[in-house]
Image (cartoon, rainbow, N blue to C red):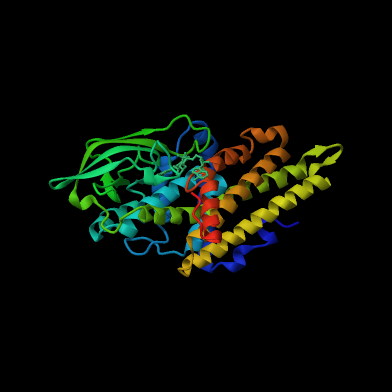
Amino acid sequence: MTTIDQLFDIADHVSAEEREWQLKAREFAQTRIAPIIDQAFEDRRLPVELLPEVGEFGAFGMYLHGYGLRGASSVAYGLVALEFEAVDSGFRTALSVQGSLAMGAIYKFGSEEQKQRWLPAMGRGEAVGFFGLTEPQGGSDPSTMLTTARREGDAWVLNGKKRWIGLATIAQVGVIWAKDEEGVVRGFVVPTDTPGFQATAIENKLSMRASLQTEIELTDVRLPLDAILPEAKGLSAPFKCLNEARYGIAWGVMGAARSCLEAAVARSQSRESFGSPIGGKQIIQAQLADMFLEYQKGLLLALHLGRLKDAGKLTYGQISVGKLNNVREAIGIASNARSILGGDGITSDFPVMRHMANLESVRTYEGTDEVHQLVIGRELTGLAAF
Ligand SMILES: Cc1cc2nc3c(=O)[nH]c(=O)nc-3n(C[C@H](O)[C@H](O)[C@H](O)COP(=O)(O)OP(=O)(O)OC[C@H]3O[C@@H](n4cnc5c(N)ncnc54)[C@H](O)[C@@H]3O)c2cc1C
């Protein structure tokens, strides 16, 4: 009998270094995150005490170069995201917010001084960062942004509200996107101890409970002129950061899918009904086989995207294909696994219901299903239907 990982093993298609990252991440996720995740989910708590360990492990911004960061391949990063999300999407989300979004924005668009100041500390997990784009009036169309940045003498003054922003109540710094007086979207590096900055945790989530999302209020937040990200002008800048995170999601959700599939296969072998294991029933085997197909296809798609990304060829449309397909299929696999587990499937005896609940968030953030359908539709037709 082969394990889920062995039937079509992608280990042969990744380098020794990439495999090493994966196995290190698996070890970390299984020994450090897994034992505490159910309680953290129950307590609505991101296990923040593990963030410095993730820093030590080198996963924050691991595919960026210089500034004490690891310069690993995008495939290596994807494998780490997969192993983290095999335990919980919430912890992988923290990795994405810090590494792909906050560090990614400073790395891509920051001044040398901003990079030197923040990237090494964020890479080590000593400084936590957030990425503040979404606002309460809606996230799919960030051009409706109401947050403003106005020049006042030798300062920028920020006012506005953000919603759903990861990590902001525990962060030392973050990137706030705001419109300047000409209506151009600009990014600002905002230390969270700046007067007028206030973040409050969103407490009533039924998904991503072992994760931290917040609301931010900016009231006359005065920043020095050099707080602006000099290279970010217009919405294409935050979109470039989102694409990094979307890429990681295409891998990560396959971890959640693997975890659900493993639970369903194991249970099907031990659970008996009508005198024999349910795993011996043809309908259950057909379901497991279909779940496995989508898991394998999703994994191969993620690997393909990773190789394109490392070759500098990955396009927006391709990222949308990966995000939309892999999240959709992970949700399908989780739902099917839940049903194979029967009543026990709704309890925390299995990770499946937690994955199902988390994946609903993943479906919405970094572009909803509909937004990615519209991106792909535009690629196919040349017509923007947003
Ligand atoms: C757990 C979590 C973490 C997050 N982390 C962050 C973060 O760190 N930083 C950050 O800036 N944001 C973050 N977000 C915000 C996230 O990106 C938004 O929730 C997302 O962009 C969707 O915006 P919305 O929730 O306002 O939904 P809306 O934009 O109001 O969309 C509602 C529905 O309308 C559909 N819709 C919208 N426009 C169209 C259209 N043109 N055609 C068809 N259908 C359409 C959408 O697909 C969706 O189904 C996070 C969200 C969650 C849930």
